[in-house]
Length: 369
Image (cartoon, rainbow, N blue to C red; front, side, top):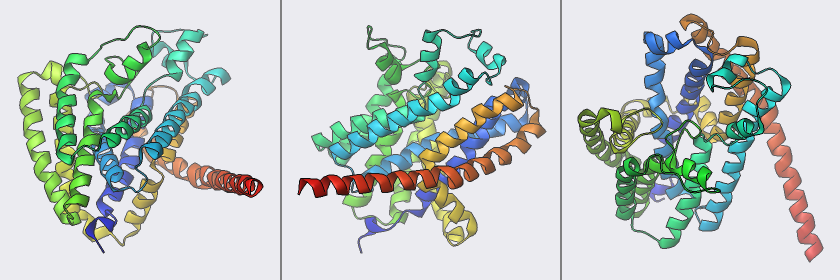
């Protein structure tokens, strides 16, 4: 069996772990007081853990390179589906609780608005760009790149060029009606939290490593060792850039330039190597790994469920109202509810929908013959 046919357990571990971390981070953002978030060791620790976003994107890139469903048509279809899910999530987490009157007024005021919201303000919330929008647009772009049949080193060069160019394109606005498209790519505002530039760089670097894995017939050890070496170089380059120009390179976590994305991607590549080398082999047959593997397989659905529950929960808990201990205790509650809702509701509905789609396809095929 060729090496690239083996399952990369470290990627499952990293993706699954990212689900648990994102629940903690989002619970902190929406429930904890501003003082708890910014002036406590607990708040700073959760924010540091939240820097693992880049590992999820690197894992996405590696998985794309290994997937048999990476034809341009398949990538376009997946990209459009993920984009649709992203806007569906915005409807669940924002529009629905606002329409039902359960969204705290303090949350509305955080935008500088007052209820009732105008159509333009509701549209702003509906079009909020999250990591699902980033993933969807990135898949559409990668579909085009795959048609060009670029060499693997070209992907690495392209990732670095995008990272460098992002600081010169930040805030660029296309004329209407393309202004929202420019937000998705170059946003400097919080309508889009993960603009394509520079975050797609992490995906392309992952795709480069995935191509190395398949084309050079590397083992899993070889892949993560190569990723760790590349990560160390990126980490050093990123730290130097951030030290030289901290205000521009790492202005905030979401709207990064070269220094910020190089630092985060490099750090996460090094962490993936350490996880693969020292932790993952020892827990492969444990219950912990099985839970993380489950979360990895269903990461998109779990992402939507946890954000929906957290935003609906503000109708009970309020917005930024909890101290450190209250927030800490709320995190396992949100995580447990997320897993229960997914396993008890989302999975059965998904299986039923797939069954109906399969029956409909058979009926159409039978009628055609």
